[in-house]
Length: 361
Image 1 (cartoon, rainbow, N blue to C red):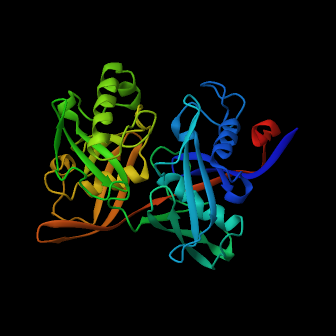
Image 2: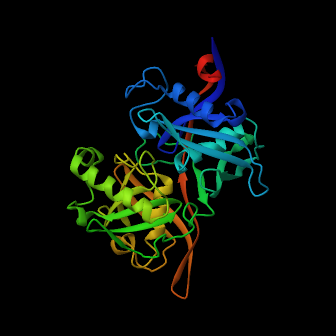
Image 3: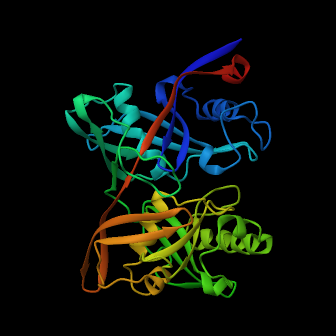
């Protein structure tokens, strides 16, 4: 026998996955994760028996509910599905999947739609980040068609404004967890940053790279990937995040000066492979760190002012424009918010099926 579970299959930004109302999944987290792994195909890289893919951007899940906080309308829990490890990691967040949370909540009636645009306050249960998304709702219905293009996607769609309202220190308590804009690990300068996403930032030249390599070129360099992972594990302990083996945070980025008229060039790792485009939370971290003197991001970023309100991040599939609200007081930078445009697409709504043995085990 099988249990049927209502869900929506959506693209959010440059990621995709199943979106669930929390009450439609098991309340016990161990059973919930077992169910999710089964639905994504827990049978090797091909994941023939599920809806997942062979790339991390295709193995994501969003669990949504009406918020229990007076400061938010919706609670959002993100999960990074890893069939190889048999895990669903709810430690990090995903700003791309977050872009789909607003449309999903509206479609499922968790929040009412306004005429024109609907602003939804979202609490990220993974990180404590408060976010605001603005969804196009002409005629009080979600509009998916539009003219906004994202790097890494062919089709245009309606814009969804995504703004993180609380970015700094959500995992470690500090913007600079070690207190230093740069540290040295295994002879390599790094910046350890906790803004939207805990990250380890490298300068491309320090790794013998140009910075504009393709993800395929980087993913083929086994020795480089092993070196980065060893540094990431040490960085995690220095940041107070503990043992990062089997976990996806902290993430990493290799940074270089812009190559195509932007502000900074980034290659983002998730964490053991280079992302085909770039994570939203990672874009917020890299661009925000560019405002902090002494960091690697600050050294390679090219701007005309010390406190720009717009930075353009170049990634393998295009560019992301990030709008920053920041201030400087006695040489200390405060990041108030960061925002950008994403899009979403409803691919399919219906039921997915899991064996009763998995649900009831």
